[in-house]
Length: 355
Image: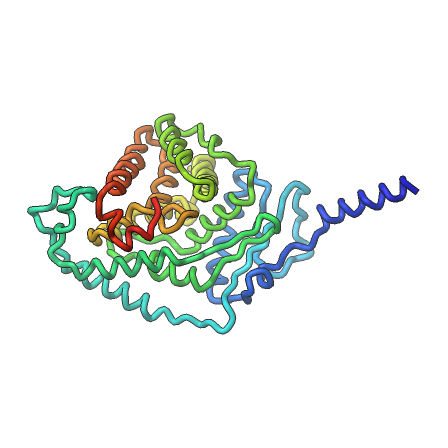
Protein backbone atom coordinates (compact mmCIF):
# COMPACT_ATOMS: atom_id res chain seq x y z
CA UNK A 1 0.00 0.00 0.00
CA UNK A 2 2.84 2.41 0.89
CA UNK A 3 4.46 1.70 -2.48
CA UNK A 4 1.21 2.48 -4.30
CA UNK A 5 0.81 5.77 -2.40
CA UNK A 6 4.43 6.71 -3.16
CA UNK A 7 3.92 6.06 -6.86
CA UNK A 8 0.69 8.12 -6.89
CA UNK A 9 2.42 11.03 -5.16
CA UNK A 10 5.34 10.95 -7.59
CA UNK A 11 2.97 10.80 -10.56
CA UNK A 12 1.07 13.76 -9.16
CA UNK A 13 4.24 15.81 -8.75
CA UNK A 14 5.44 14.80 -12.20
CA UNK A 15 2.12 15.83 -13.69
CA UNK A 16 2.20 19.23 -11.95
CA UNK A 17 5.72 20.01 -13.08
CA UNK A 18 5.66 18.77 -16.64
CA UNK A 19 2.07 18.70 -17.84
CA UNK A 20 0.65 21.85 -16.25
CA UNK A 21 -1.56 23.83 -18.62
CA UNK A 22 0.25 27.06 -19.59
CA UNK A 23 -1.44 30.24 -18.43
CA UNK A 24 -3.39 32.05 -21.13
CA UNK A 25 -2.39 35.74 -21.00
CA UNK A 26 -5.77 36.73 -22.44
CA UNK A 27 -7.42 35.42 -19.30
CA UNK A 28 -4.63 36.48 -16.96
CA UNK A 29 -4.43 40.06 -18.26
CA UNK A 30 -8.07 40.51 -19.28
CA UNK A 31 -7.13 41.32 -22.89
CA UNK A 32 -8.19 40.08 -26.33
CA UNK A 33 -6.33 39.21 -29.54
CA UNK A 34 -5.17 42.13 -31.68
CA UNK A 35 -4.43 42.13 -35.40
CA UNK A 36 -2.99 45.54 -36.36
CA UNK A 37 0.67 44.72 -35.76
CA UNK A 38 0.55 40.99 -36.62
CA UNK A 39 2.52 41.20 -39.87
CA UNK A 40 5.29 43.22 -38.21
CA UNK A 41 5.29 40.98 -35.13
CA UNK A 42 5.58 37.85 -37.30
CA UNK A 43 8.67 39.34 -38.97
CA UNK A 44 10.09 40.17 -35.53
CA UNK A 45 9.58 36.60 -34.33
CA UNK A 46 11.49 35.37 -37.39
CA UNK A 47 14.39 37.73 -36.67
CA UNK A 48 14.53 36.79 -32.99
CA UNK A 49 14.37 33.05 -33.76
CA UNK A 50 17.23 33.39 -36.23
CA UNK A 51 19.37 34.99 -33.51
CA UNK A 52 18.32 32.46 -30.86
CA UNK A 53 19.17 29.56 -33.17
CA UNK A 54 22.48 31.11 -34.25
CA UNK A 55 23.46 31.56 -30.60
CA UNK A 56 22.33 28.01 -29.67
CA UNK A 57 19.78 29.24 -27.15
CA UNK A 58 17.24 26.69 -25.93
CA UNK A 59 14.26 28.88 -26.78
CA UNK A 60 12.05 29.20 -29.84
CA UNK A 61 9.28 31.76 -30.32
CA UNK A 62 5.96 30.85 -31.89
CA UNK A 63 3.19 33.27 -32.91
CA UNK A 64 -0.08 32.29 -31.23
CA UNK A 65 -2.03 33.46 -34.29
CA UNK A 66 -0.22 31.14 -36.72
CA UNK A 67 -1.37 27.55 -37.10
CA UNK A 68 1.09 24.87 -36.10
CA UNK A 69 2.05 22.75 -39.11
CA UNK A 70 2.00 19.04 -38.43
CA UNK A 71 4.97 18.40 -40.69
CA UNK A 72 7.22 20.87 -38.89
CA UNK A 73 10.43 19.34 -37.67
CA UNK A 74 10.13 18.46 -33.99
CA UNK A 75 12.20 20.62 -31.67
CA UNK A 76 14.92 19.10 -29.59
CA UNK A 77 13.69 18.09 -26.15
CA UNK A 78 15.84 20.80 -24.57
CA UNK A 79 14.25 23.61 -26.63
CA UNK A 80 11.48 25.54 -24.92
CA UNK A 81 8.73 26.97 -27.12
CA UNK A 82 7.53 30.41 -26.04
CA UNK A 83 4.13 31.46 -27.38
CA UNK A 84 3.91 35.10 -28.43
CA UNK A 85 0.51 36.81 -28.15
CA UNK A 86 -0.47 40.17 -29.63
CA UNK A 87 -3.14 41.65 -27.38
CA UNK A 88 -5.25 44.76 -26.79
CA UNK A 89 -7.93 45.92 -24.32
CA UNK A 90 -11.55 45.17 -25.14
CA UNK A 91 -13.52 47.93 -26.87
CA UNK A 92 -10.43 50.10 -27.32
CA UNK A 93 -9.65 51.46 -30.77
CA UNK A 94 -7.00 54.22 -30.55
CA UNK A 95 -6.64 56.66 -33.43
CA UNK A 96 -3.29 58.23 -32.43
CA UNK A 97 -4.40 61.65 -33.71
CA UNK A 98 -2.55 63.38 -30.87
CA UNK A 99 0.69 61.49 -31.63
CA UNK A 100 0.46 62.42 -35.32
CA UNK A 101 -0.07 66.08 -34.37
CA UNK A 102 2.87 66.03 -31.94
CA UNK A 103 5.28 64.56 -34.49
CA UNK A 104 4.19 67.09 -37.13
CA UNK A 105 4.65 69.92 -34.61
CA UNK A 106 8.10 68.64 -33.65
CA UNK A 107 9.29 68.54 -37.25
CA UNK A 108 7.89 72.01 -37.87
CA UNK A 109 9.42 73.58 -34.77
CA UNK A 110 12.76 71.81 -35.32
CA UNK A 111 13.40 74.14 -38.25
CA UNK A 112 12.82 77.20 -36.03
CA UNK A 113 15.11 76.26 -33.14
CA UNK A 114 17.85 78.81 -32.55
CA UNK A 115 20.80 78.35 -30.21
CA UNK A 116 21.77 81.31 -28.05
CA UNK A 117 25.52 81.44 -28.67
CA UNK A 118 26.12 83.09 -25.31
CA UNK A 119 25.16 79.81 -23.65
CA UNK A 120 26.32 77.14 -26.12
CA UNK A 121 29.10 76.02 -23.77
CA UNK A 122 26.66 75.23 -20.95
CA UNK A 123 26.46 71.57 -19.93
CA UNK A 124 23.27 69.87 -18.77
CA UNK A 125 24.33 70.13 -15.13
CA UNK A 126 24.83 73.92 -15.47
CA UNK A 127 21.98 76.28 -14.58
CA UNK A 128 22.74 78.40 -17.65
CA UNK A 129 21.65 75.56 -19.98
CA UNK A 130 18.07 76.75 -19.40
CA UNK A 131 18.89 79.68 -21.73
CA UNK A 132 20.39 77.58 -24.52
CA UNK A 133 17.49 77.86 -26.95
CA UNK A 134 15.88 81.11 -28.01
CA UNK A 135 12.79 79.30 -29.29
CA UNK A 136 11.08 77.50 -26.40
CA UNK A 137 8.06 76.14 -28.28
CA UNK A 138 9.72 72.80 -28.95
CA UNK A 139 10.31 72.07 -25.24
CA UNK A 140 6.65 71.31 -24.36
CA UNK A 141 6.39 69.07 -27.44
CA UNK A 142 9.38 67.02 -26.28
CA UNK A 143 7.93 66.91 -22.77
CA UNK A 144 4.72 65.39 -24.11
CA UNK A 145 6.61 62.73 -26.10
CA UNK A 146 8.76 61.64 -23.16
CA UNK A 147 5.85 61.62 -20.72
CA UNK A 148 3.93 59.40 -23.13
CA UNK A 149 6.90 57.08 -23.53
CA UNK A 150 7.19 56.67 -19.77
CA UNK A 151 3.63 55.34 -19.56
CA UNK A 152 3.95 52.72 -22.31
CA UNK A 153 3.96 49.03 -21.49
CA UNK A 154 5.02 47.26 -24.64
CA UNK A 155 5.41 43.65 -23.51
CA UNK A 156 4.77 41.35 -20.56
CA UNK A 157 5.95 37.88 -19.68
CA UNK A 158 5.25 35.45 -16.88
CA UNK A 159 8.20 33.29 -15.74
CA UNK A 160 5.69 30.71 -14.50
CA UNK A 161 4.32 30.16 -17.99
CA UNK A 162 5.60 29.99 -21.53
CA UNK A 163 4.34 33.16 -23.15
CA UNK A 164 5.25 36.71 -24.12
CA UNK A 165 2.40 39.20 -24.52
CA UNK A 166 2.99 42.09 -26.94
CA UNK A 167 0.61 44.97 -26.25
CA UNK A 168 -0.60 46.17 -29.63
CA UNK A 169 -1.83 49.68 -28.75
CA UNK A 170 1.35 50.69 -26.93
CA UNK A 171 3.47 49.23 -29.71
CA UNK A 172 1.61 51.38 -32.22
CA UNK A 173 2.07 54.46 -30.06
CA UNK A 174 5.80 53.77 -29.61
CA UNK A 175 6.15 53.34 -33.37
CA UNK A 176 4.47 56.70 -33.91
CA UNK A 177 6.80 58.47 -31.47
CA UNK A 178 10.09 56.56 -31.80
CA UNK A 179 9.84 54.29 -34.83
CA UNK A 180 10.12 56.95 -37.48
CA UNK A 181 12.79 59.29 -38.74
CA UNK A 182 11.77 62.54 -37.06
CA UNK A 183 14.72 64.66 -38.15
CA UNK A 184 15.53 63.42 -41.67
CA UNK A 185 19.18 62.85 -40.78
CA UNK A 186 19.28 59.03 -40.99
CA UNK A 187 17.52 55.95 -42.35
CA UNK A 188 15.28 54.15 -39.87
CA UNK A 189 15.28 50.31 -40.03
CA UNK A 190 11.96 48.49 -40.01
CA UNK A 191 10.00 48.48 -36.75
CA UNK A 192 10.10 44.67 -36.68
CA UNK A 193 13.71 45.01 -35.50
CA UNK A 194 12.59 46.90 -32.41
CA UNK A 195 9.99 44.23 -31.62
CA UNK A 196 12.67 41.52 -32.10
CA UNK A 197 14.84 43.27 -29.50
CA UNK A 198 11.86 43.43 -27.13
CA UNK A 199 11.24 39.69 -27.62
CA UNK A 200 14.89 38.88 -26.85
CA UNK A 201 14.64 41.09 -23.76
CA UNK A 202 11.61 39.14 -22.56
CA UNK A 203 13.42 35.84 -23.23
CA UNK A 204 16.16 37.29 -21.02
CA UNK A 205 13.65 37.41 -18.15
CA UNK A 206 12.81 33.76 -18.77
CA UNK A 207 16.44 32.68 -19.09
CA UNK A 208 17.69 32.89 -15.52
CA UNK A 209 20.91 31.09 -16.43
CA UNK A 210 22.30 34.27 -18.04
CA UNK A 211 24.30 36.38 -15.60
CA UNK A 212 25.71 39.86 -15.96
CA UNK A 213 29.16 38.31 -15.44
CA UNK A 214 28.72 36.58 -18.84
CA UNK A 215 29.66 39.93 -20.37
CA UNK A 216 33.27 39.60 -19.16
CA UNK A 217 34.42 38.92 -22.72
CA UNK A 218 33.88 42.64 -23.43
CA UNK A 219 36.88 45.00 -23.32
CA UNK A 220 37.79 45.20 -19.63
CA UNK A 221 37.09 48.92 -19.09
CA UNK A 222 33.69 48.62 -20.81
CA UNK A 223 32.78 45.57 -18.74
CA UNK A 224 33.91 47.18 -15.49
CA UNK A 225 31.80 50.28 -16.18
CA UNK A 226 28.72 48.17 -16.96
CA UNK A 227 29.27 45.94 -13.93
CA UNK A 228 29.65 48.91 -11.57
CA UNK A 229 26.49 50.50 -12.97
CA UNK A 230 24.56 47.23 -12.67
CA UNK A 231 25.72 46.68 -9.08
CA UNK A 232 24.47 50.15 -8.09
CA UNK A 233 20.85 49.34 -9.01
CA UNK A 234 17.99 48.01 -6.92
CA UNK A 235 16.82 44.44 -7.56
CA UNK A 236 14.07 45.32 -10.05
CA UNK A 237 16.31 47.55 -12.14
CA UNK A 238 19.07 44.93 -12.01
CA UNK A 239 16.67 42.42 -13.54
CA UNK A 240 15.61 44.83 -16.31
CA UNK A 241 19.25 45.65 -17.05
CA UNK A 242 20.16 41.95 -17.06
CA UNK A 243 17.41 41.25 -19.62
CA UNK A 244 18.61 44.22 -21.73
CA UNK A 245 22.16 42.84 -21.52
CA UNK A 246 21.00 39.41 -22.63
CA UNK A 247 19.33 40.84 -25.75
CA UNK A 248 22.32 43.04 -26.64
CA UNK A 249 24.78 40.21 -25.92
CA UNK A 250 22.98 37.82 -28.30
CA UNK A 251 22.73 40.47 -31.01
CA UNK A 252 26.42 41.37 -30.64
CA UNK A 253 27.56 37.74 -30.84
CA UNK A 254 25.20 37.12 -33.76
CA UNK A 255 26.85 39.97 -35.63
CA UNK A 256 30.33 38.61 -34.95
CA UNK A 257 29.55 34.99 -35.83
CA UNK A 258 27.89 35.75 -39.14
CA UNK A 259 29.50 39.04 -40.05
CA UNK A 260 30.37 38.31 -43.68
CA UNK A 261 27.16 36.47 -44.49
CA UNK A 262 24.67 38.97 -43.06
CA UNK A 263 22.50 40.84 -45.53
CA UNK A 264 21.61 44.50 -44.98
CA UNK A 265 18.19 43.36 -43.77
CA UNK A 266 19.80 41.05 -41.19
CA UNK A 267 22.09 43.84 -40.03
CA UNK A 268 19.15 46.10 -39.29
CA UNK A 269 18.55 44.55 -35.88
CA UNK A 270 22.17 45.31 -34.96
CA UNK A 271 21.87 48.93 -36.08
CA UNK A 272 18.51 49.52 -34.41
CA UNK A 273 19.80 49.97 -30.84
CA UNK A 274 22.32 52.78 -31.58
CA UNK A 275 19.86 54.43 -33.99
CA UNK A 276 17.11 54.34 -31.35
CA UNK A 277 19.58 55.74 -28.83
CA UNK A 278 20.28 58.64 -31.20
CA UNK A 279 16.56 59.22 -31.76
CA UNK A 280 15.86 59.43 -28.02
CA UNK A 281 18.85 61.77 -27.67
CA UNK A 282 17.49 64.03 -30.42
CA UNK A 283 14.21 64.40 -28.56
CA UNK A 284 15.86 65.09 -25.21
CA UNK A 285 18.30 67.55 -26.73
CA UNK A 286 15.58 70.18 -27.09
CA UNK A 287 14.06 70.33 -23.62
CA UNK A 288 16.46 72.04 -21.22
CA UNK A 289 13.85 73.04 -18.67
CA UNK A 290 14.37 71.81 -15.12
CA UNK A 291 11.77 69.06 -15.58
CA UNK A 292 13.22 68.23 -19.01
CA UNK A 293 16.70 67.72 -17.57
CA UNK A 294 15.23 65.46 -14.88
CA UNK A 295 13.35 63.39 -17.48
CA UNK A 296 16.57 63.03 -19.44
CA UNK A 297 18.63 61.72 -16.53
CA UNK A 298 16.26 60.27 -13.93
CA UNK A 299 14.21 57.07 -14.06
CA UNK A 300 10.43 57.06 -14.65
CA UNK A 301 9.82 54.43 -11.95
CA UNK A 302 11.45 52.38 -9.20
CA UNK A 303 11.50 49.33 -11.47
CA UNK A 304 12.90 50.56 -14.81
CA UNK A 305 15.90 52.72 -15.76
CA UNK A 306 15.19 55.54 -18.20
CA UNK A 307 15.23 54.77 -21.90
CA UNK A 308 18.35 56.72 -22.86
CA UNK A 309 20.41 55.10 -20.11
CA UNK A 310 19.23 51.64 -21.18
CA UNK A 311 20.25 52.32 -24.77
CA UNK A 312 23.66 53.66 -23.71
CA UNK A 313 24.32 50.46 -21.74
CA UNK A 314 23.12 48.21 -24.58
CA UNK A 315 25.17 50.13 -27.15
CA UNK A 316 28.25 49.60 -25.00
CA UNK A 317 27.68 45.82 -25.14
CA UNK A 318 27.48 46.05 -28.93
CA UNK A 319 30.69 48.05 -29.13
CA UNK A 320 34.12 46.50 -29.64
CA UNK A 321 35.94 49.76 -28.92
CA UNK A 322 37.85 49.44 -25.62
CA UNK A 323 37.23 53.04 -24.48
CA UNK A 324 33.53 53.42 -25.24
CA UNK A 325 32.70 53.26 -21.54
CA UNK A 326 33.27 57.02 -21.35
CA UNK A 327 29.76 57.84 -22.54
CA UNK A 328 28.18 55.74 -19.78
CA UNK A 329 30.43 57.17 -17.10
CA UNK A 330 29.85 60.74 -18.33
CA UNK A 331 26.08 60.21 -18.28
CA UNK A 332 26.16 58.77 -14.75
CA UNK A 333 28.41 61.61 -13.54
CA UNK A 334 26.04 64.24 -14.95
CA UNK A 335 23.07 62.42 -13.46
CA UNK A 336 24.70 62.33 -10.04
CA UNK A 337 25.58 66.03 -10.24
CA UNK A 338 22.03 66.99 -11.26
CA UNK A 339 20.53 64.94 -8.44
CA UNK A 340 22.22 67.27 -5.93
CA UNK A 341 20.80 70.44 -7.49
CA UNK A 342 18.08 72.28 -5.59
CA UNK A 343 15.67 72.08 -8.52
CA UNK A 344 16.00 68.28 -8.65
CA UNK A 345 14.60 68.22 -5.12
CA UNK A 346 12.14 71.12 -5.26
CA UNK A 347 10.71 70.83 -8.77
CA UNK A 348 7.45 68.87 -8.55
CA UNK A 349 7.98 66.87 -11.76
CA UNK A 350 11.56 66.07 -10.80
CA UNK A 351 10.44 64.87 -7.36
CA UNK A 352 8.11 62.34 -9.01
CA UNK A 353 11.00 60.69 -10.86
CA UNK A 354 13.57 58.32 -9.41
CA UNK A 355 17.34 58.34 -9.17
